[in-house]
Length: 364
Image (cartoon, rainbow, N blue to C red; front, side, top):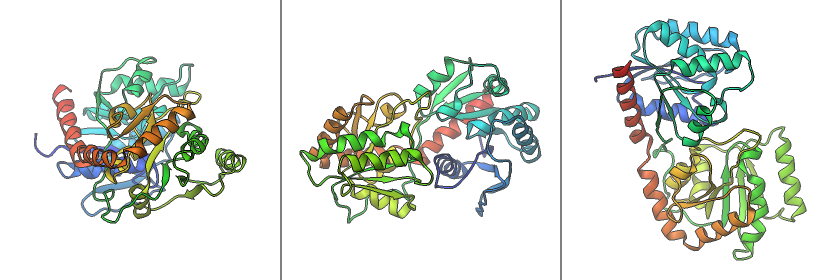
């Protein structure tokens, strides 16, 4: 099928947040093979010479009024598209209704927690049930997410497509070196498990006494950050743990390149869970092995003893042991990490998306 016209709806195209980084990377890759039109919120300014982006949407929300506005803007801007893809769940009910009226297939990406419909009666439940009823093909990077959704609502095909990595941004530096630190990148939330890494650090330091821990993520007004800082003080790790806040992509690439290992000790917290973190392949693309936990997209991306380790959640001793094993075999781990990332660039993932769009159009 030649030159599919795709309409995208997303909350952001900014690299500073997960949805934005996912959306921008995916759309750029698909835009090389297809024509795209993108709708984003009014508050977000984005200009790209070869991409039609309309900053018209309300702030992202499941609220009924938001869905009405999303529906109307989709009708206005997507009259000539062949398929519509909602890249974030909170806009998807309005997108689904617009796709029905425009008589085109509807695709939604299920990332994680936001894809789960409520079990109690509410407008949100009605909206999400309708969304799943209308979806032509769903896509996710996490079979765990699909399983969670299907426990609550029935829907059709869901195709596994992993998140990718932008190899123009994340790559191995020639001058890279192991600077004896562990690294975590992401929103500082309890489910990300930075507290477990802090607990594990003294155990790692028994074999690698110079090992430190660097944390990248927004530090503003966060009670969990205060909890982490108290842990650091109580464990007398002030000289070993560094909170870096937000960093730009160049700084992030250097941090990935020079770390001993990337660690994401994620766990399910009160129904909130990880989907498929893009940081896995970002780290791997820079030569960093990844230590993470079971129960989400991790088990596809990270192969035990190959490009990292996947361990049971909520266990600092097991986590520390995996970190030590990874550092022990750093050269092999780095080589394997680079290979794994090269197989999952956004250009390669984009081809899978285009195939999904072709299939959705054919079965619609």
